[in-house]
Image (cartoon, rainbow, N blue to C red; front, side, top):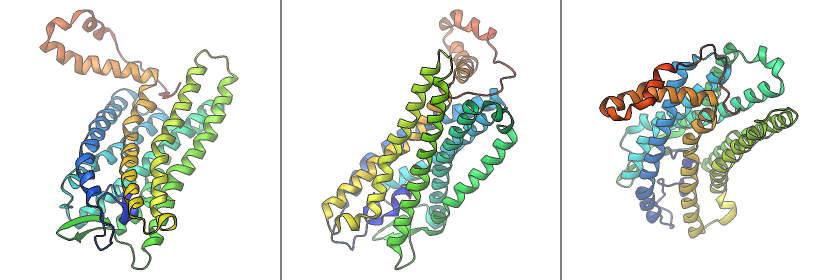
Amino acid sequence: MATSLMDTSEETTTFDYDFSMPCQKMNIKTLGAKFLPPLYSFVFIVGLLGNVTVVLILIKYKRFKSMTNIYLFNLSISDLLFLFILPFWIHYARKNDWVFGHTMCKILSGLYYVGLYSEIFFIVLLTIDRYLAVVYAVFALKARTVTFGIFTSIITWGLSALAALPEFIFHESQEDLETHICSPRYPEGHEDKWKRFQALRMNILGLAIPLTIMIICYTGIIKKLLRCRNDKKYKAVRLIFVIMIVFFLFWTPYNLTLLVSAFQASFFSGDCERSKQLDIAMQVTEVIAFTHCCINPVIYAFVGERFRKYFCHFVRRHIAVHLFNHIPFLLGEKLERVSSISPSTGVQELSAAF
């Protein structure tokens, strides 16, 4: 399932339980059915509003004139793809029964991972793009082209699909007592090897490599900014630390829990209570990781001064006007200013950080 992230360890997932084992986890299953649907629903609503807004503003005002905008657009599409899957997991979590069939289990689990990996990969591309723009400004004028942005975006989606290929292959709908579960069925005799491979893959591609690239790039950016005479450089440096810290805090707990889950036999074999605690930790850290798609629009778009201006113009022109039509006394001077505000033409790029 989508919690297909947790399917890498069947005995410690939220929903995929092996009832032949002596360690019964019905209480964990009930806990997940009670708390996960509202939490997932919150992530779905907030993430949908934020990312749809980013997509609409980029389409309406930016016209994809820079590589940065192309990466921002694709990052939002990645988040929306991930969010599109959530209603199915909400239903699955609430009913504790997979009712969407074998094919949908494969497709949705695979797309879930495509959205997950593409989100992380586009964050890495935005980091590299920002690094080139600041540290190698002259070279960036030639390298950071729209064509190159489109080309690297296509490659990134291909790599994301390749990374998610095991989910398309192994996930399937399976009978579990009187219900059905959507979980991976690995080749017999190799279950543990595949679980550990999946956990290592997620930690390497989803945490270690991206975090290393972010540290290298943002270290170079900070050194460059500190040498510049710019009143806003300290604000930019603070923002850089926020980006790295947020990424680390949101993804590290989940990835480490996933790793411990895959190798739990080496840590506490046969310890039922520890296994139950690991299940709860997986639920909590997964929800934290999910909420990162709600934060992306704030960090990578709305913190940009130009983007905020476009957003305010969009709200005034397309939302506030309709409200004022129904509440005339709110018009005042603000509505008069709306007609005089027009988005800048010829903007070359959206700077999400500076």
